[in-house]
Image 1 (tube, one colour):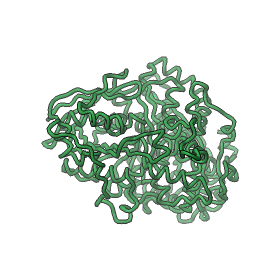
Image 2 (cartoon, chains in turn red, cyan; image 1 turned 45 degrees about the vertical axis):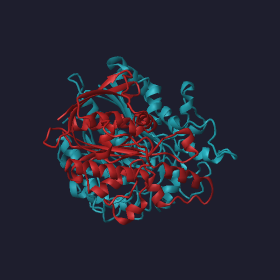
Image 3 (cartoon, chains in turn orange, green; image 1 turned 30 degrees about the horizontal axis):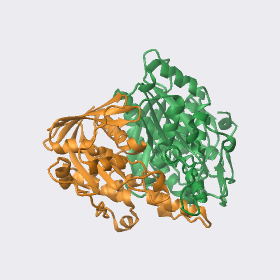
Image 4 (cartoon, chains in turn red, purple; image 1 turned 90 degrees about the vertical axis):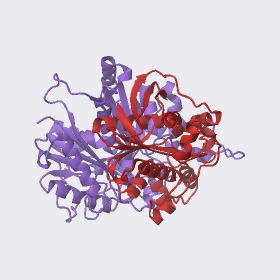
Length: 263
Length: 375
């Protein structure tokens, strides 16, 4: 399945936006770890902005950046959201509330607990009535999202925004599901080449585990392994390099073979 | 099918764990004394028990085994919907945190129970499938949307067949959460009733094996004719008052099937029995279909199965076609006079060839399916 990358968004520890992240991932600047610069999105009305947890902040930041990069109207693309967890702070809080009476789960906590909360907020902020899905495939959530996005581009001939994000659980869940940092990324994928296309990517599902692409920098490799959504870093590094590349991304019993060709 | 024909509802007064809400629920009693297959014991939780119990019905395991032989285990995708997966396991584990360290009990298995993917992980292992798999978790539209995923993956050549479906099981988060929104009825839910006052939460599961249409298929083969997806872009937990997103999903489903409104013989509504859902959906259906197509919500039988609602109602839609059966609406006494649609309270019969089924969820996530037989 072939698609074209038209826009990229990135927000992670020491990776504050694609412009700075690109230099680091291309090896042109040193990676300096720093807390993820989480901020409320100006895309949301004030009431929704107050209710937005970490995944919503991540998704809106990288989505907005990618659409700006592509020069596209946010209301015009289908969206694929993918995350291993959803709002992990909120899940922890609800579990705590449910232990003792009176078990008052607030309406906001409840509607933010759905896995597609980020998608719901995005569609409101982006004024998008286009199809939107929210996926989970544990550590392979990004890879599943890339496969689904490529299929939508190829089969539905649609412009698709892929948004992947994950963030740490508080304890005690952190001990059983350690996620290293808050990390999000977005790609705008199109079925045709345009003057804004950055690269062509060809995605193919192959059986067997493949040869997982790794990061050269040890700290970036730790990030890639430490956050499900950061499994995207090897693809982002290939895009940042501006060179043709072929990478493999593990997907349970299979892997995705991704061929990147700069435009 | 017999329960539909005999109007036997699964709703009963809420008796689940130590939940102290005045409500009706649909509960699968067998799950309390049931376990998953021994080699998959790490996956043991209410949601995966329900998944296994459902897989064991109606010759599904045999049908999947035949497909495996035909295509190979790696060529069958698994795309499943759930909203809360095995979260009950975590809710219960939080009652038993280590008093010294605050740690979760040692026998708590996060990846195999709480994580949303747990369901697809369990089902792929249970059926021995190795094709592409993921979970769609878009609240109450989840297990309708998986049909779209499967069709796309098969069209793209990623797989040759797919197991789609959904499972959601009772948990405290959902019961207390819907209650906090004032959306839980004290009575068995009454879809499209003038006096309707909320949902009844249920648990349920369903699976469907999808293959490509071939020349050898009989004229009676059950087909997925179209899928339409849309977003409301309106509110997290309230549907668009004019049903704009719902209308878009239904219209896109008709377009993808190459059908017109008049080609649909029955509509299985989302019909949750909340004031806002039924008003919004009723308006959207009236705009797209007028009042000529028989419609009903079957949630009076099942309760709201959330992430399993889409698959359950898709299966009811196929039963309607197979048996020439139009389900009515149990518990509904007095149809809301504001509804300008042909809403059926009593069961009926007819030549049903094509059914549209609606599933709408939190976050404004909408999906409509068209199922039936070729014209």
